[in-house]
Length: 123
Image (cartoon, helix red, strand yellow):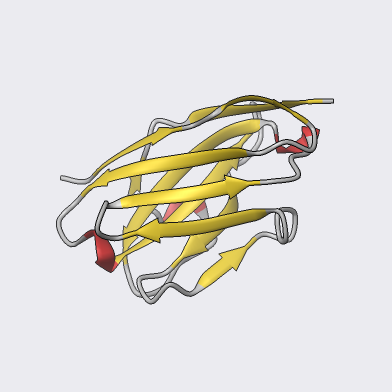
Protein backbone atom coordinates (compact mmCIF):
# COMPACT_ATOMS: atom_id res chain seq x y z
CA UNK A 1 0.00 0.00 0.00
CA UNK A 2 1.42 3.36 -1.06
CA UNK A 3 0.18 6.53 0.60
CA UNK A 4 1.02 10.11 -0.33
CA UNK A 5 0.16 13.16 1.77
CA UNK A 6 0.83 16.67 0.49
CA UNK A 7 1.30 19.74 2.64
CA UNK A 8 2.58 23.29 2.34
CA UNK A 9 0.01 24.86 0.09
CA UNK A 10 -1.58 28.20 0.84
CA UNK A 11 -1.93 31.76 -0.36
CA UNK A 12 0.91 33.95 -1.52
CA UNK A 13 1.39 37.15 -3.49
CA UNK A 14 2.91 37.12 -6.95
CA UNK A 15 6.69 37.03 -6.71
CA UNK A 16 6.61 35.13 -3.45
CA UNK A 17 7.58 31.56 -2.61
CA UNK A 18 5.96 28.42 -1.29
CA UNK A 19 7.37 24.97 -0.56
CA UNK A 20 5.24 21.89 -1.01
CA UNK A 21 6.03 18.59 0.66
CA UNK A 22 4.74 15.12 -0.06
CA UNK A 23 5.23 12.51 2.64
CA UNK A 24 5.33 9.04 1.12
CA UNK A 25 4.66 5.73 2.78
CA UNK A 26 5.95 3.01 0.48
CA UNK A 27 8.25 0.03 0.44
CA UNK A 28 11.51 1.07 -1.23
CA UNK A 29 10.50 4.69 -1.87
CA UNK A 30 13.80 5.31 -3.62
CA UNK A 31 12.71 3.08 -6.50
CA UNK A 32 9.72 5.23 -7.42
CA UNK A 33 9.44 7.87 -10.06
CA UNK A 34 7.93 10.87 -8.27
CA UNK A 35 6.04 13.74 -9.84
CA UNK A 36 4.13 16.92 -9.17
CA UNK A 37 1.01 17.72 -11.17
CA UNK A 38 -1.45 20.57 -10.96
CA UNK A 39 -5.03 21.02 -11.98
CA UNK A 40 -7.47 23.88 -12.23
CA UNK A 41 -11.24 23.30 -12.10
CA UNK A 42 -12.53 22.06 -15.45
CA UNK A 43 -9.05 21.52 -16.85
CA UNK A 44 -6.85 18.49 -17.35
CA UNK A 45 -4.19 17.63 -14.82
CA UNK A 46 -0.84 18.88 -16.13
CA UNK A 47 2.67 17.83 -15.25
CA UNK A 48 4.82 20.30 -13.36
CA UNK A 49 8.00 18.35 -12.61
CA UNK A 50 9.25 14.80 -12.29
CA UNK A 51 12.26 13.21 -10.60
CA UNK A 52 13.44 9.72 -11.44
CA UNK A 53 14.97 7.15 -9.13
CA UNK A 54 18.38 8.18 -10.56
CA UNK A 55 17.48 11.82 -9.70
CA UNK A 56 17.15 12.90 -13.32
CA UNK A 57 14.71 15.81 -13.39
CA UNK A 58 12.21 17.21 -15.87
CA UNK A 59 10.34 20.51 -15.66
CA UNK A 60 7.43 21.84 -17.63
CA UNK A 61 8.40 24.93 -19.61
CA UNK A 62 5.93 27.01 -17.62
CA UNK A 63 7.85 26.50 -14.37
CA UNK A 64 11.43 26.03 -15.57
CA UNK A 65 13.81 28.33 -13.71
CA UNK A 66 11.24 29.09 -10.99
CA UNK A 67 10.37 25.71 -9.43
CA UNK A 68 12.72 23.09 -8.00
CA UNK A 69 11.77 19.47 -7.40
CA UNK A 70 13.78 17.37 -4.99
CA UNK A 71 13.50 14.17 -3.01
CA UNK A 72 14.87 12.97 0.29
CA UNK A 73 14.94 9.19 0.16
CA UNK A 74 15.90 8.86 3.82
CA UNK A 75 12.85 10.88 4.88
CA UNK A 76 10.67 9.41 2.11
CA UNK A 77 9.60 12.90 1.16
CA UNK A 78 9.19 14.77 -2.11
CA UNK A 79 9.47 18.55 -2.31
CA UNK A 80 8.54 21.32 -4.69
CA UNK A 81 10.15 24.70 -4.03
CA UNK A 82 8.15 27.32 -5.88
CA UNK A 83 9.77 30.74 -6.32
CA UNK A 84 8.80 33.81 -8.34
CA UNK A 85 5.19 32.72 -8.16
CA UNK A 86 2.75 33.96 -10.76
CA UNK A 87 -1.02 34.25 -10.59
CA UNK A 88 -1.24 31.55 -13.25
CA UNK A 89 0.39 29.11 -10.80
CA UNK A 90 -2.89 29.08 -8.87
CA UNK A 91 -4.05 25.45 -8.90
CA UNK A 92 -4.53 22.32 -6.86
CA UNK A 93 -1.17 20.58 -6.67
CA UNK A 94 -0.84 16.80 -6.46
CA UNK A 95 2.11 14.50 -5.93
CA UNK A 96 2.13 11.17 -7.72
CA UNK A 97 4.23 8.01 -7.66
CA UNK A 98 4.99 5.25 -10.11
CA UNK A 99 7.21 2.21 -9.65
CA UNK A 100 9.35 2.75 -12.75
CA UNK A 101 12.81 3.80 -13.90
CA UNK A 102 11.15 6.23 -16.29
CA UNK A 103 8.96 9.20 -15.43
CA UNK A 104 6.01 9.72 -17.76
CA UNK A 105 4.64 13.21 -18.24
CA UNK A 106 1.00 12.13 -18.46
CA UNK A 107 -1.16 11.88 -15.36
CA UNK A 108 -2.91 8.71 -16.50
CA UNK A 109 0.37 6.77 -16.23
CA UNK A 110 0.64 7.24 -12.46
CA UNK A 111 -0.85 4.72 -10.09
CA UNK A 112 -0.60 6.50 -6.74
CA UNK A 113 -1.83 10.00 -5.86
CA UNK A 114 -2.07 12.30 -2.90
CA UNK A 115 -5.20 14.20 -2.00
CA UNK A 116 -3.85 17.53 -3.25
CA UNK A 117 -2.95 20.87 -1.72
CA UNK A 118 -4.29 24.22 -2.92
CA UNK A 119 -1.94 26.97 -4.04
CA UNK A 120 -3.41 30.44 -4.59
CA UNK A 121 -1.30 33.29 -5.94
CA UNK A 122 -2.74 36.79 -5.89
CA UNK A 123 -1.52 39.87 -7.72
